[in-house]
Amino acid sequence: MMVDEPIAKDYVDEADWASIGTTPSNSSGASERRALASTKPAFEPTLFFFYGTLAIPAVLRKILGLREDPVFLKATVRMFKVKMWGPYPALVRLSSEDPRGDVAGVAYTLQTEEHLRLLETYEGENYAAAEALIELQEPRHEHARSMYGKTFVWKGYPEELVDGVFDIATFRSWNLNKVE
Image (tube, rainbow, N blue to C red):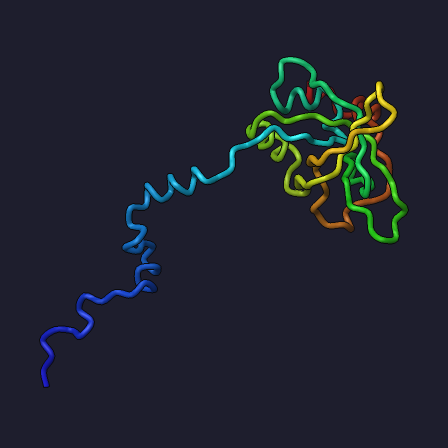
């Protein structure tokens, strides 16, 4: 028996389309990409807790390209501790064996997604933004006001960290001339 035409002449299943990167249902491509891009949530101003070099006004001003020093609020976070990675502090979550502790620092509200991107670039691949309960210290009130925000925490190798204390004055004298 001779077959003049293949049995599945016009048949192409979804797996075949996927293997070549397009399907009949998404062949419009550009319009679907626009729809997906429009579903990305818009950036909202975000409260950040800074505990190390970013708590130095001149450093943050330089990184973000601000015209004036940023306005900081005194703040703390709980359930974290500071370890050192060379001359830089690294915030790590407390383990169940660690005594409860607060880390002192400052709070600042990032206004743009570009500022977040600049900070992520500055912090590098060993740090990641993570949610934290930030307690704002208000001098006119007896109690701190707590609110959720973000802070940069260590995501590098734990064995690279050592016990120690970040000293802003030492850092300023050691490195600030590179920033200003």
